[in-house]
Image (cartoon, rainbow, N blue to C red):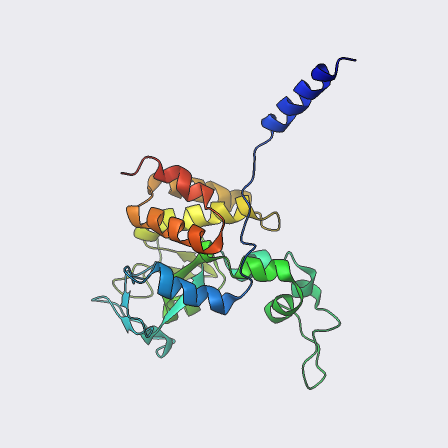
Length: 246
């Protein structure tokens, strides 16, 4: 058989399959990721994702006018780095998170599992946990109350934080409009970049709608490029949307 006739279909087969972006594979330290974000990404745009609160280099929060909280009062004064796609959402794909590991034993001889075990034993998990494309500054109290809840629409629920329209109810959360597009593209990035993470059909439909409804901002584009330079991998979802931004 003619060799060229074999090669051509093979090339066409490769082209027919979508190419998936690679995730973070350069930094597996969550603490290092947080420091890099604060010092090298947000140094000139210190503002939280959900409430638009200002914060300084010492993590002190300047709460926006009308912001209130009745829980986690100490954490409301500091900025924290939030996994927009919760660590549990991808962490449970790892056996160390679900079942533990023979080496996940405390100094007192008690076995443990969950996030601590996955972080201790699995490098792939650590890379996902430290991916800066999925880490955003948030008021500590908001981060705490949001917990690992999935996003949805809660039209009949009132804001838990006064003027910051972050609504949380029945283990679900509705973010303010200004954060929805960024959230959507982060979920899409994580699914595209890591085979361990898949959205539910319902979550994917919501994120697709938010992505279209809330276009990318200039800051979101700049942020993605800064992280790409530090971490080594692009956020192709955001980059593709930024082509139409001046």
